[in-house]
Image (cartoon, rainbow, N blue to C red; front, top):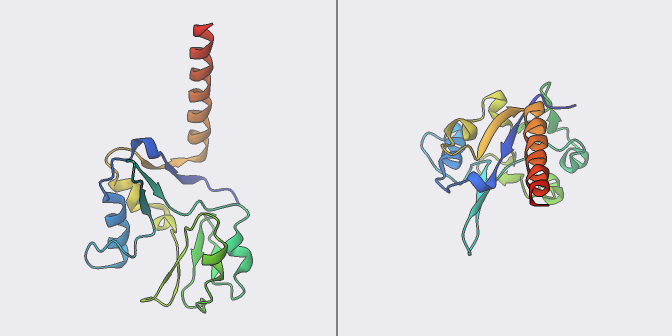
Length: 158
């Protein structure tokens, strides 16, 4: 199933403020405790950072290994975890090629981004536009236009 809207991550815009991490974690905790956040900032020693969260893969390996049905696609196309069906085998954690599923010791279940069920706090709290919740068609159009600009600039150099 194709998502109508998705999280668009633009690492070059990330300023490392951690607003996304704190906004995400506050959904499940009373205060801003970053550990349970389903979005992470990966910081590099040489500078810069990249926001990372579940990519909602079409052929999601995590979905394929879940034998209890704890991982399922919602009507919106977003992969969700049903903690009442999760047995804690962590197979989904092991097969995610991007490391975007974790296991919650407190919740005794796998945990991953569910895009806040259509109103992602990370995108709402990002001051720099590094994380946006946009229509799929907008992403495609923006990429096409950026590529066309690069071709035009290259042509102007010849």
